[in-house]
Length: 483
Image (cartoon, rainbow, N blue to C red; front, top):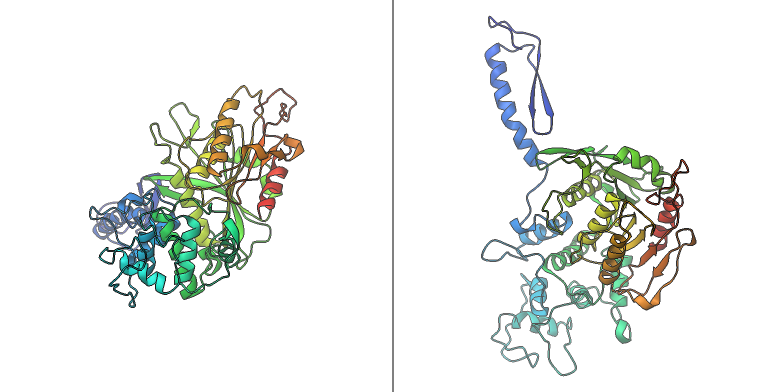
């Protein structure tokens, strides 16, 4: 490439690494030795550029946490509001009790009292948590139970955590009457764009990463007027987002459809649409029909990797149910688009058909509480403990001879269980797909179960595994009903 005799040669030298990335080096005015030295230096920088694309998690055991939870924990860690365990872990899925949550809220407060007597019947002033509990009582953040106890070791649920946190950060509201006392608190957070009321069930226990996320949202709102539902791209757009990402030393790509009227100030919904085992992302982009119906949304179509038999896959053999390889691909797409465009982080949905339905349903479970809804045809789901509620439209033809109908029944049952829906409260849903709606759930998430009867493809051939003609329109109606 470089010629001989030390004479400068006008040549391009290409250094390749990983998934085919190339680095052109122009040697028009360099000597041969200087050009070789430049190649060596730049080739050493290429791996560093790959690593720089994704910041490490704040704790090593948070690699599989959603990136916004990582951001929240890192923010609070930097403020010394939270710390890890002696072994260097954070244990993000561990539940938080009432005393621990008050310590997280009041850590670093200069006016913590040192009690010399019990402020609640079950709070010994010598216990580590007594200063935080008694300070919270003095400030009327907590009142305790009618029997005079506080029950510091009980798990804190989402409603209690929201009330405590809003009290500490000076957001006072008039409490509602009866068992739904918490609704005025959750409504306030929802209306201010701090926390969507569709992302949790009020009485579900709070784990460490969700506790950190709640505190991060309220603290930033108090200090910066931060609106959690608005992505960073709403304030500082970076131009067109890259549609090729480096993940596990491989290049991964996705297709992107932008809204007809994209705005730098108005957050738009985001839909991630997964393709199946044999159809590519280009093919499903053609037949899903959601580009037409969801014209106000950003829609990303990830490309899966091919496996050893030349079909597509979204996971590696042996992946744990909650740690599928391409859960992280989903995360990276969301993060990339959120940084470059104005995305409504409360309206992220997933769509899929066949194996793509399996992936979409699985993402909706593993990233429950983050995703607004899923809409799928002819696919099941990983069976695991879901991270939170997600609304779901689950469609499948009972005569499907390619994907077992029982798989979608399992996905439906898992979603009903996660959303804490009442099985006896079913009413009619969209008639075109023969849907049944389960609206009486623990929160605002709901489930539509649609055993449709369409069994012909676009050529008129018998194909009960088909994507129904009305599916795109029903997806639009379903997502709009959740708003």
